[in-house]
Length: 385
Image (cartoon, rainbow, N blue to C red; front, top):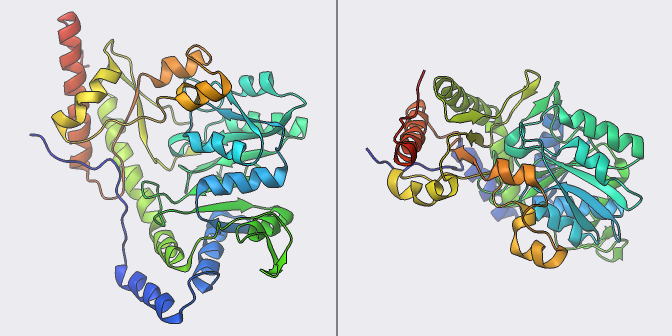
């Protein structure tokens, strides 16, 4: 039976306290640079186990600030083509050129061999993107490559609040981590972002440029900045979300375990391998469709038939976006691994408001549709062990 199922849903628990905090902000008249923003940053820094957490208005802004601090103007920033265009655009906003790279097919992560191939005297930074909330072993090799060349590593942690590898949390492997609080993310402030870093000078710089480059105040401008701060009301939302983060992660892991059990008895699909030392945040649950069907055509009709969308992270990739093909000359064939892998990838719904029954329904719908398409193409049923 068809049912409507959300692929992502923000969830706000303990709403009475949240509303009291928002009321406090409204009655105070202080809508920026107040106690709730300071507390949100403090709680986030403590959770991430870093000295500094600097809130901003988006993850894109966080990336731009870090890249401006590094000084990428007139240089290149190596970025996986498997990311949202905002990651690469941040390099442009900071005055640099995004240099796209191919991925590892098993993990959808930036391929260290590509980093090694692309590093040059023009390279100013490397951005590693923790796709779907996974931090795979490749992060260690990329970190070594960057350290050997004296090139800053920046982590795009938009999907990865709560993720870790070998006990190290997202945002602690490189110079800085950049988090997103967009409505679909693991925690949300409506829109917003956070920079994590151990670099005292980056901390000082970021706090300046997020408010027009202020030094001691707005009559003392020491940097070229912008209007990039996170306001007090959204910081109230952020504090509320941090109180629930452990619960959100627990629920996401529970849904992932449901999918894991179901996929273990199925052919035609392959899940993302999770290294035993990786603790994913499960922002998404990606699957590789190995059955010989037209995946993109299946995605077009899926929501109408079953009540939820089959998403992907990310297809089309950055190099296949029209604006990058026009601006930088990218085209099909540049990154064959990403093209062949991600064109056959789908993600199933996963969020903290889902139930095991929802997960079973979503999985059964996908298997049913794949089976139907296999039979139509070959007159052969999808095998089950």
